[in-house]
Image (cartoon, rainbow, N blue to C red; front, side, top):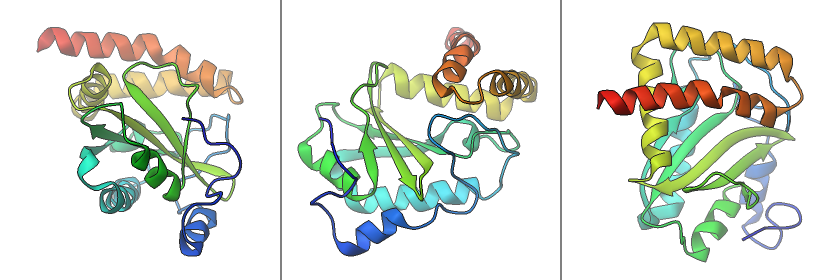
Length: 200
């Protein structure tokens, strides 16, 4: 389901619209399409908690779980200043109300996304992308692999160090091409996840 036109067109209250248009929270925000790494910010876990609470209050029983993933979820790791959340649902045949609720919370669905097993949403404030929301099944490959990669980075400093060096190299190479930056990391991530699967 694609949403055309400005966010909140004909939906949500005035307060919700003002919330969406308010400045990006301190510690997050990146121009669309760009790549910029910043040092780890200890505010990121709290910003995740704030956003997760907003989603829990509105999404309700459709949601099974919501977790913090991506580099901002790994203490000490340099990252793009965007909070990644992963939302588990029973089925990706999500009801229309889920899309409407997420739109009211400031999220825009990206239906052109080609990654299987997930629905992709972004949130922007003050022209800065601040949150990525990945909606998927609790037992999906997407959910399992992202949690395992995050957990390996948290528990293995050598792996985390190699990953951040790769990210710095790629950020310098692709400062204005987010897709190329992401694609270039795929082999590293896939290898780390496969190793983790093999180890059980």
